[in-house]
Image 1 (cartoon, one colour):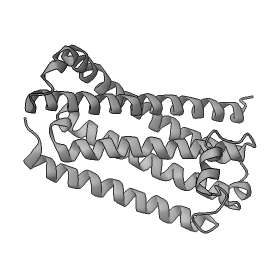
Image 2 (image 1 turned 180 degrees about the horizontal axis):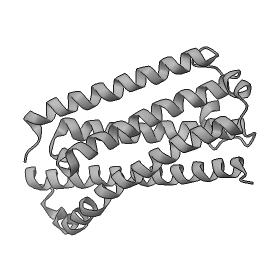
Image 3 (image 1 turned 45 degrees about the vertical axis):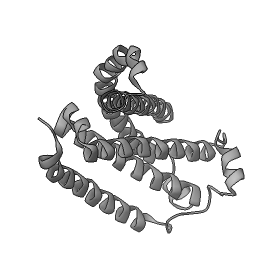
Image 4 (image 1 turned 90 degrees about the horizontal axis):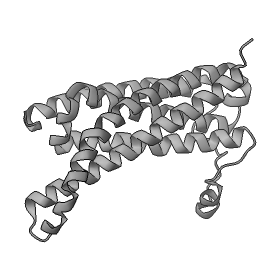
Length: 216
C-alpha cells in the first residue's frame, strides 16, 4: 500500500528544488540581460567584454531551463496540494490560522508561477525583448518563489519541525499562526476564483501589450 505521507513529502522536495532552480535561472537571465544592455549603451562598461561569452551561455541555457523547471514545479505543487488534502485532516488545516495561511500562500505562489509559464509558453524567448513582458515574467517567477518559500516555512511549522525563517519572524514580530483569511471553505473558493481572474487578465494584457513591444 502506498504511503501518501511519503509521496507528499517527495512531491514537496521535488517542486521545491525545481522552483528554486527556476528562480536562480531567472536571476541569471536578468543579470545577463543587464550586462548586454550596459555593453551596448555605456562606455565605462566596455572592460566587461570578457563576460560576453559567459553572458551568452547563461541566456542560451538558463532561460529554457527556467521554463522547464517552472513547469515541473507547478505540476509538483498541484499534485502535492491534492495529496496533502488526504494526508492532513480538513479540520486541522481549515480550523487553524497556520493551515489557512499555508493554503493562501500556496494559491498565490501557484498563480504567479502559472503566469510566468503561460507568458513564456506564449511568446518564447522573445518576451525578454519587451521590458513589459520581461518585467511581468521576472516579477511572477521571483514573487512566486518567495511565496513558495513562505509556504514551505508554514508547512514546517505544521509538521512541528519549525522553520529556518523563524529568526526573521521574530525580528519582524510576525506570528505565522495569525490567520490572513476567515476560517472555512468559502474564503478558499473565493481566493481560487480571484486568482483565476488574475491569471487570465495578466495573460490577456500581456498579449495585447506584446503586439506593440516585442521585436520580431
